[in-house]
Image (cartoon, rainbow over all chains, first blue to last red; front, side, top):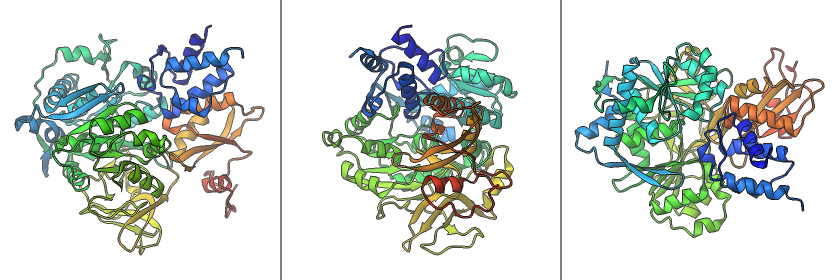
Amino acid sequence: MDIQERLTKVFRTVFDNESITLTPDLTADDVDEWDSLSHINLMLAIELEFGIEFSQSEIQNFSNVGELLECVKTKLEPS
Amino acid sequence: MKKVENIAYAGLTRFIENGEGEKELLLWVENDLSKTSFSYSYFETMSNRIAGILQEIGVNPGDTVSLFIPRSPMLISCFFAVLKNAAISSILFSTLGEAGLLDRLSNSNARVIITKKSLLRKIISIKHQLPTLERILVVDIDEDQNDHVLSLKRLLSKSSSAFDYPHSLDAETPAFLQYTSGSTGKPKGALHVHGAIADIEKSFKEIMQLQADDLYWCTADPAWITGLVYGIIAPFTTAARQLQYNGTYNADNWLKLLEQEKVTVWYTAPTALRMLMQEEESKFSQRDFQHLKRMYSVGEPLNPEIYHWGKRIFGVEVYDNWWQSETGSMMIANRPPMKVKPGSMGKPREGIESFICDENMRLLPPGKQGLLCLHKGWGSMFRGYFHNDTAYAEKFHGDIYVAGDLAFTDSDGYFWYVSRADDVINTAGHLVGPFEVESALLEIPEIADVAVIGADDPIMHKRIVAFVKLRSGAAWSKELELKCRVHVSNKVSTSAIPAEFHMIEQVPKNQSGKILRRVLKAVYEGKDPGDTSTME
């Protein structure tokens, strides 16, 4: 399963919505259950899924799924 | 019985009859900042079409129609369409989870729900528990799914733009239900009537004081009483020019809108202001808010720190006010030209008798903290909790309505909020009952017992803190925390998600099994828990 597929699975679990399809320009305004409170759930779930950690500013500043996906990819790259 | 105008007539049809149909009423801004202007004619026609569809599928006066769609021009049209049928509108937050939704739909005996495709699955999953639910109208599917799940889009395409309805009705005719949480038990639906309209308009004029050239922006979602009463009803019935933004909190977009659209009167909430306060000062200094005349705030106490920040950053007065789902309109408010005392809720508006009592309903003098009370009888007062007469009766001592808040007055007659008088948690303006959160958490197999309290929070006023007793053999982990958070979010609501979890050996309870939240609060705050002699 690639990163986007794993991320999609996380989104669907967190928002209990199997119809979610991730696109780079998808934002919180496009998903009914995605607000500032459930966003914390999403961040926590992504951290656990990928074994990564987000900084506070990263958590607050993702403006769409494209940015989130890029950030996950960067964190997974071998240093 | 006294007759009044149907709120839909007062807010729409009357303006068409007066030749003001094309007047620009609402500037709708999408989250990408694209804009559309809407007139009275648009909403009149659209609500007529939907009203006809509702009538055709069997909605009768007094039936409940639940509106489970996010804020949108469609939601506004649906609201007025329900009222044109003299049915009862119940707008629900689209972030509600299945249990939260089930509680509200079953209490209201909704016969019809209007929703959108992405929310439909939540309704379908609980439909078997809703015997009165006959039809689900979905705004964004092209074809009917079956005899019960219908495409509103398809029905609209063959609907009539005309709809006849009685423009006046008995003042006590139910109009809308507003759900709110209590200390115990399920959410309660505060029932409001068409007769509330005069009081709503009066409060809006007295406190907001809008002029013809003003552009008003109420940031509240219509599923919240503020968003319905002062985002739809009052601006529509008083022909206030307004802006609505279809997006969640976004500092850049909000500031851009305030500046570029030249908003003059802004009604928002302390949590939003506290979130803005965390932004870089340069975000504000690069913008010009010269058109803004004043700001209003509601939902939680506006602490002096935010008040002073708001006044400094935006250069205008910030007027806090207090009211509830039950009161139906603003009760106590700061407003021009009164002098604002930072941190105070202000003074009762004209015609409202408000005072502080002790538990025996004895009047307390200025400076003494007690129960915030109102003398019964104002026009927008709720007329009951839907199907819950006992809970309604408990809110009154004779002619006195007990609001459930603790407050005091000062010698100048200003009111000062202290806290809730009960266990309800006010988090970012949402009232959350601890029972709802605890019930959801107890469904998680690893949890043996749980208690929830509200703790002070620098952004949200109160945050939800859960004290968890795990079953033997279970261990707390990040994974289990996520499981708890996601379950509460999807079962109850996003606003009910605990911000913190603490493991405890035993949930403190008295001998009759009631959770001793004060003990948990004291322990959490590092204070003496006081008398624990009744603990089991």
